[in-house]
View: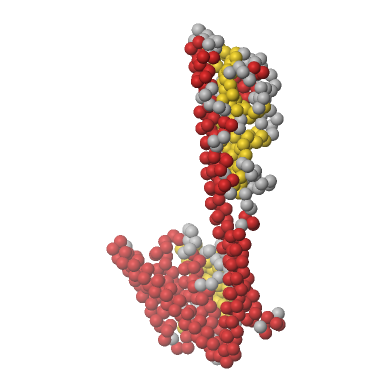
Length: 497
């Protein structure tokens, strides 16, 4: 602590270094956060594009099951002559076969060559892809199964569509299932997932396998998803199934050159700021000792002038609104305008008289009249939002002028006006053995006396300075944010000899 006092330049330089470093690091972190947000938005777009692309590919192929259904409708459930037409549906290289399974048991497969092993498959039994077939029968909708190991070898994706034929009585009967089997992963060979690595990301398409309830990878980029990396997921519905497309960046944020470059720039800026502050403070130190008294005197005078300037600004603002209100009331409420004009005149006369008052001392009763005039004007403007309570016994004594009125102005202007619904200002006078005590209490917005800076604190400080010129006079302040403010003014009684 002693060394800090002897070398304030070093202390300020350290503070400047820390503040500049923190500011730059916050800026770097914000820029990286914004980049990550944009990157995640981009990954979300890519994931949705890949999911939609997979859906379009499978939708195009699975529509072949509806052709099979239409064929059975025309033939009444017979598929004996379907071989002549099967070539049309089997043009694509990745279409493995089409199946006819009356009553859920595979009886016809085209082409038969290489697929004979699937004949006799009972889709009501346990087996890969059979749960989807059973669900399709129950829901009477197309279901997609796979990828799974095919009985005839290799991997495939199959579309299971239950067929219901009319029975002649106006209803329908379950005929069986038709299915289109696609070679996997050849069916998705044209997917843009293959180009994801080039964009700096890794991608995996996966689903929850209904056979074991575990995640099953459907398709993945050559460079897989890094283990434990946070992903952007897009869920793509596919014929009563859901495929999830997961994307993640190949390079973590802490390995990006831009991040470390930002840290280095932050250190450089902090060092430059510290050097600049250190040099500036050292130069000021050389001059401070010679001009300390003059600076103190000028500072005190500046504070006094700032306080007076602020009070004048507040009053000019009050004058402007009062004159505007008078202009409106003259037309709308002449009686109210007449009263406001009287109050305004009384307020002005008191303030002008206070400037020329001998010794800055005057009558409590006269200042109370100015307070009432000011409050009545504000009450006309605020209406029910301002309530004034006066607990004043009949009394008069000498006080330093402009010590009660600024406190009431402060209570109305900074306590009641900002509060939604307004509030109450209470003015109370008490006679004690050796002094008079005036209390100005409001239930306005309140403030923290140690932290507040601005018009309200300067106005009260001016009153405190004015009272300090008179022995035995003082100002006591308590305020709680959200509760209100209480100001107690103590005036010592004058000797009567």
